[in-house]
Image (cartoon, rainbow, N blue to C red; front, side, top):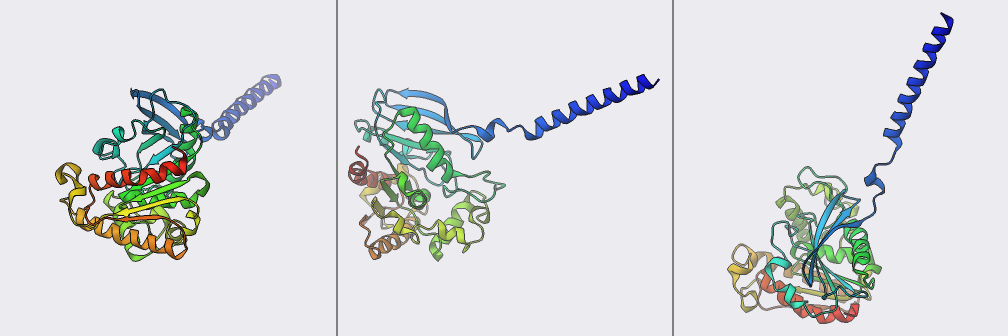
Length: 328
């Protein structure tokens, strides 16, 4: 009997040890996502000069797609120009790729142009908390660490970069350039609101996130919190010193630059007010750079009402400055 009891005890101990080991394996073993590196998970050639890539983001634990414009054959050693989308993150089909002749414009230029699809209503930043409506947003991490690492490897780039933002992402493009100054040699802000801590900038950032159903407190905490100041390009403008900087905004009055308003979007639906606000915000940014004696170019057009016609005109106008800065 004693032998049977001892045998049973050993069996129970063995079973418990096995269960404990299994529990430890479940609890302690790192998940694949925890150590996954950012990488291109899929690449599709849409034409000899246009590709669609999917990049895994460890910080957001999901895949983000981007159009990439490049010379035929994707030659190595070229710089990269990241062009962030507007409020809908290009997820709504409204984008540089769909609403302008950006493919034709860059067709003969020796540069890789990355057009991300994602970041709707997020201000293209790292949020402090996941949001019930907008989910997990770690866009600063994605745009400054994960996407460049994947793009540089996939396209064998020169490692030289520029970044631009339009409308919602215009200020965030400047912010990203202040957060990681060494990453970009040039930055362009088209028709946006760079500031975040002045009344107009705070209102704009709050309105953008609310438009997507998000709670701005989940982004940087309550307005006026330290993180709002850390992400204000006007406050941190000195970190832009040494870069090629292009700022632009229209007047809020429709004109030839807008082209066909119905085709370009927004021109007849509040675009005049939005662009007038963008002009005021961008003027504040320019004044701050002037006060710091930081060279930049500020284009204030006599017409323009927040249309793709206006944005595309400023892209073309800014390109020579950007190209010189990155060697394109």
